Image (tube, rainbow, N blue to C red; front, top):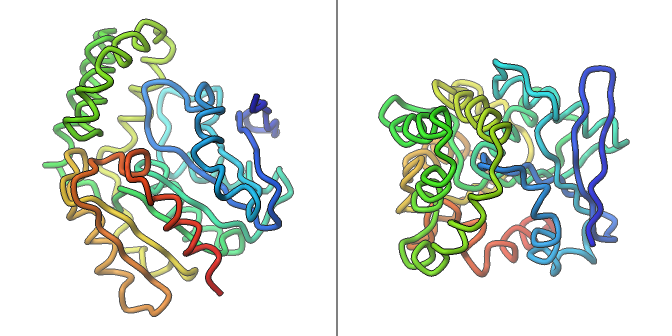
Length: 267
């Protein structure tokens, strides 16, 4: 069993779990989800098993007591404080989706903390046209329609064949969603709207790998390409685009973690 621990600072509490025995430290910042990824700790640890010998891996949640208005800038500040409170510095960070937005801000504002950066299916600039999916998710959560939210969320982030295969699973899991989960989801999802740090991207100074998906129904492939356009002048920037794996390629592409591992271990 992967144990859930809690970071306690003067400003907040934040859950995390840790696994692996490697000398290098990797912090994973998960994306937006209907329920906290802490409930899937064993699954996450199993998915990253091939990296356990090289890395000690920390998966860090959002703060426990989320205020009614909680910006991605606030999330980045809190996550950086959490990393410091764990006694870590010069870590590699992998941020997926909203987690990638947080990771970019940490690399920009706390460069001393970040050795390497991996960005998965994320965006530095949310355009109004990209908010349609978010608005529908938020509407469903506000209406306390956990079942339809879980189904729609899964349908939007996974390829059709994966969604169809696991539709009954998503239906079952949606029964465990609480009103607190839905309220948390509304706050976190709303924070993505209007997010724009595109003018600050060139402040990222660490080696960076960006991985996107051409058929991303949530952020679209242009989001990753905009990051690339701002960073590809640097020889230590790398880009890889998937075909056919959906927004959550970080869950569905079989070679995803191998690509992360190879990039992080390169000299």
